Length: 404
Ligand SMILES: Nc1ncnc2c1ncn2[C@@H]1O[C@H](COP(=O)(O)OP(=O)(O)O)[C@@H](O)[C@H]1O
Ligand SMILES: [Mg+2]
Image (cartoon, rainbow, N blue to C red; front, side, top):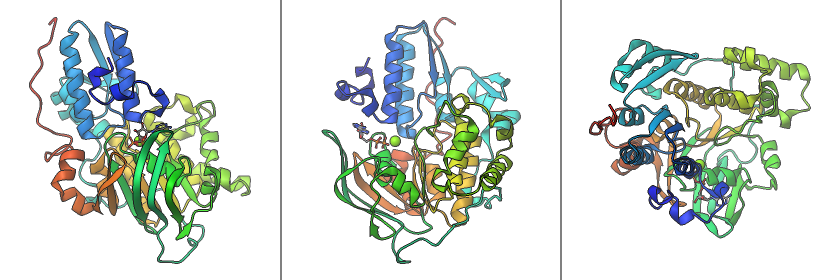
């Protein structure tokens, strides 16, 4: 089963599962499910945490699995339209708990109701005006340090997890008010880069500077106390706490502020995301992925940060939700928030950010302005799903339906 996944899992077969990158954990989930020899395979977002190239690699593998186990039925939940087009024979599109369309992928996605409820506005972020809302970025204070110093800088950083080296001499800068993306394949060290800034991973070599000075923070709590908010990979809700308490957790570093002010902040979050109103008492672990992302954004906003670190914001979200997330990030960016993001969906990220760094096996392979990277054929082929529009790649050959 591990060998099915080529060199992704086999060489790591002796490692603890928690040490795998998010995408490799997804692969492991699938291998484990297949090992049970099921009659029905249930896949919930199998390509989460994978960029377009990796998503297609997994889709090809699932096509092979489908041929090898023709008796097995597959029910998959997936937001990536090109993956659905490639794999699914039937597509059921749902909104608010009800089915709106049940058809072939092509016909389903062409349906006007589907477009309205699910696909979002389409078009590029940069072609749309910044949307006004209730959660605004208003820097509480000027950033400390010399005005021309970067907000964040990594200099020649190595990170090891035990014997595994995850980063090799990485250097990067995020200027004040700048939005910067770290792109790259699965297990290339993207999350580790953010974890290094947050002191969740320790460099074995190199320096981290904050506002032009060597970072003095010893713990993640110290980093957060310096005006940094984090939205981690997979959002990381406190599953057993209410939605309200999860949002308030963002204000932990501001806990000296009066309760009335925090209540006002919660009200603003509800004004931004009206569905939240009825769910403040619900356990956060029971929210959908999209809802969790909104809560995570509200939580980060309550930190009133000067710098936001966000890992894979579009992961597992419907196209409409991805638009919503990026709309808010674009608003905050226009209001001066400094953003360091990691993103599997390079296309989306490059519409938002000013500059990006591309990692390969833990080392820097390319860097440049978002524009230049978008136009770079090497980046396009590896991370943007090829030269075709990423949501509409050429379709694979139709696969015969066994048993029909
Ligand atoms: N806690 C850990 N223990 C051991 N290895 C780890 C740990 N976290 C990450 N790694 C390894 O570091 C590499 C980079 O991981 P990560 O930064 O999560 O990649 P990405 O976010 O680009 O997918 C991977 O090979 C992964 O297996
Ligand atoms: Mg990651």
